[in-house]
Structures are given as structure tokens and as C-alpha cells.
Length: 288
Length: 279
Image (cartoon, rainbow over all chains, first blue to last red):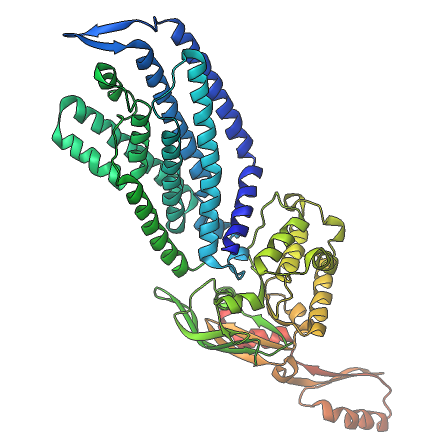
């Protein structure tokens, strides 16, 4: 445990002292600035307190639809930026660092490989979670400042986004044992893309009421649980919203909001435990 | 108890045999040079000893503990042939990290001593990325010495050093010998090995082809005598023949200015041992 904490401290310092970290911060500031400007200008162009009648008596609350849609977009951006950061921090941890000669001096120390992996995982999750929750909170306050709207759930979506990034960190760390740095980075982005496509397919399946598409999306989101966490986070911001407004929101961009149910949490924990066990076995058997 | 012992150590990568059953022992306080051409298995042997590579068969022990075990890792220091340290660390920060990883309680005093030992006292606060390759290599040696290991594996520790840096490392190795630290020195620089090592082990194609003290491995090549009439070479003569030869020359009225007993050099021993592969 002590060894893992030492490695985590090393990894955290490495994260924040790499040159790319200020770049990520600047890009995030640019994103938040553009997001605030976009929300402000768009909000000026609508009549927020109107309700629109759809079909035979269905009502849509314009302000909620507007705010939740834009905030949902920012949640996607937070997930994307968090994924970039997670991949950046973990894609080269084992094979990449071993090929560059960075890993061997650490591995020969008594702390051992399990502590090294655990420390790297803990550090990446901590850095990414702080980042994701901070950007989530910033975009939440920007949205509220412009529109006066609060999501139905505030804390749970943030926790789920952080958990989604933790899953990506775990997958990326696992990949770093097997693949070279560049190959792993590309592979994780493709997995992230596959999760998004699954979400979009599910959305289309909902709109068309296609059981096949819904099943494909369902299986994919369980196989890649960061997508299920993202969908549940998205669902959380309008968890108490009902009627046509809710129906319109569920068709929003970048994957539909879907409740995940009570088994998602235990499943994610089990998923990461299996990844950790298989990853550690592979790492222990790996010649460096 | 030997500081390091390998018995029948073998490593295969698919169809390629990197090590084909090596027996090797490094005694306490002994400095052993590990020689061999590229691909002979030297680095593989050291990596198995450090727990970086798993042996296909055979066994290796460090200070009595199985190689790769926590106890074994705690007893050794290692400088890889190809290594890199994070560029944003200062020399002092890097040693501090390795102290914590090794569980060393030496603190600032140990760091200062190690930096002085490798001639980097002035570079204590300097970032690794601003150091020359030679400075980084000396820092690597200091890193390997963190926690006062009983056994040191140095894989080409002088490859990036200038003559002055090599001399510093030579002095350092002699100091380690004085302190009773065992060293397995993997190097291509035969002259360095000849100067500092107690014993050499020559690997070729994954097996030990020669091992022993340099003087044991050396073969007599004759006696050379400088006389007033020029240098005379007695090819079949040995060391014990030298006084008689000198007496005979003096009796014959020759003036003798110098006598040299010739033996094969480590380079010649090495080239003979690795045979056709070297040529």
C-alpha cells in the first residue's frame, strides 16, 4: 500500500509537470469560455418562458429543453476532454515507458509491479476525476448563470462521469501492458468511439422502436460501461422531468439519456476488478 | 553465501535461445566483469537477476533470495543499459524518489554522499533534461547505489562517459569493493574491466565460454628483452626463465636494458573465447 502511494505521488507530479498539462488547462478554459458565450447568445435568441404545444396537447418547456440540451452537450465535452486526459496519462505506462527505459529503474525496486500499477491507476483516476468534476461544475454554473436552470440531479452525474473516466483509465492501463504507446492510444480512442456509436444506435433504436438496435446498444454499453455511466449521468440531469420535454431530451445529441438501474455500480466495480486481475497477471508475466 | 548465484539459467524467446544454461556466482565483495559480443545474453542475464525478465529454466538467487522476489529486489541496485529518468526531476528529487521506493532511511545525507561520489554535487538541483548523457549516466549510478545495496548490476555504465567520467566510475568501483559491495559489471570496454574486476566471465551465444581471474585465463607469450643489440623475443620462454636468459645474455657480453614477461591480454583472451563470432 505504501509503495502504491509513493508511485501515485510520483505519477501525480509527473501529470502536472508535463508540458502538455498547461495546454489541457488552456484548451479547457477556451472550451468553457466558448460554451458560456454560446449559451448566452443562444439563450438570447429564444423565448425561455414559453411553452410549445406539440401534437394533441403535448407541452414542451422551452427553458428546460434549452438548458438541459446545452448542458448535456457540455457533459459530452467533459467526457471527451476527460477521456483525452485519461489516455494521455496512461497510454504509455507499461510498454511505452519500458521501451523508453523509464520503467525498469522503478520496477526493480522492492515496491513491486502490483504497487506500480495500483499507484498509476490511483493517480490517473484522481487527476482525471478532479478535472472532470471541476469542468462539470464550471459548465453547470455557467448554464445556471445564464438560464437560471438547475439539473434535477447535480452530484450523481458528476460522480458517474468521474467513474466513466475511471473505467477508461482502467482500460487504457490494461492496454498499455499489451500495446505500444501509440497503438494503445489509438485503440482506446476507438473503444471510446465505439461506446458513443453504441449510444447513438440506442438512440435511433428508441426513436424507431427497433428492438435489435436497442439490444445492440444495450450489450455494447454493458461491455463498455463508461457509456452506460455517461448515459445514466445524462439521464440524471432530467431525472424528474416528464412528458414531451423528457421525450424530446432523450432524443438529444451524442447518445440518449438512459437510466442504468441499480446494477451498474456493482457491475462497474466487478468490471474494473477483473481488468485489474487480468492486467496484473499479464504485467507480472511480462518481460521488460 | 554468494551475493549472486545462477544455476542452469536459460531464457528462450520463441525459437531464439538468449541464455542456454548459465552457471555463475558472484561472491560477497567481488567485482565480476561480464563480457561478450552483442546478443551474447549479458543483458538478459542481468535482467533475470533483477526480476525484469522471467527465466525459462534454471534458477537465480540474489543474496540468497529468489531473483525477482521482494527480498532480492531490496538487496540489489541496478543501472540498465538503456535507461531514462523523467526530465523534469532534479538530481536530488530523483534520488529522493528512489530512496522512498527502496525504503532507504538515508535522507539528505545519503543523497549528498551519492552525488559527491559520482561528481554531481554541483548539479544537485539541476533538472535531468538539462544534463548531458554522461551526467545522466553518473546520476544513474548514484540511483543504483541508493539504499546501500549488497549487490550492484551495472549494464554498460561507462558507455556515455568521457575518459574523466570513466576514471570517476573506476574510482567508484574501487570504493565499492572497499565497502564490500558485490558488482556484476557488464561492459564492452575490456580495458575498464581488466583494470577493476577481480574476475571475468565471457558469454557467447548464451553460454559461458571462459571464466576466471585474468591472470588465470592469460597464456604466456614469451619473454622480451631489450639489449644493446636490439629487442630479443623468446617465444617459448616463461616468467621463470627470465633470470636465466638475462644471465646468459650478460655472460655473452650483452647489455640488458629491460625485461618484459609477455602474456595474452584480456582482449586476446576475449577474442579467442568468442572465436569466429567476433571475427
